[in-house]
Image (tube, rainbow, N blue to C red; front, top):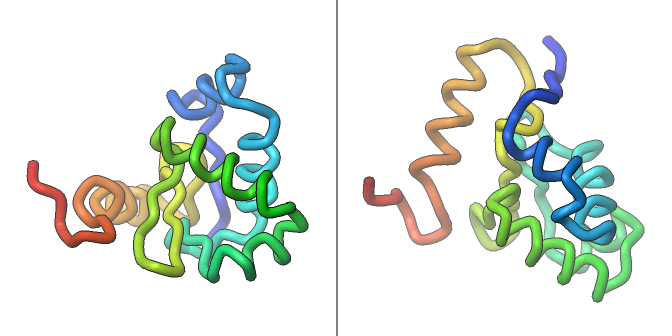
Length: 113
């Protein structure tokens, strides 16, 4: 299996359009290296700042902006899920599962459709 970067997706076009600040782009690119197979970045904010080699202000402001553009969602207290439209691991079946998790589950439980 391998990771697929989806260059034709809406989130990637958003990143290319210079709408997002460099702080958020840096956080996103650093985080993509550490994602697990479920597009999760796991750890407390303090641990993630150390892992990604970012300062507190850069991490917090970058994460706020990524959340605002719906590129990242806080999944649980220590997990951040990245939009599967950017990058995903595996085949189309796994992408379907990630899309379902992205659309339905949040920190407060299942989303209402």
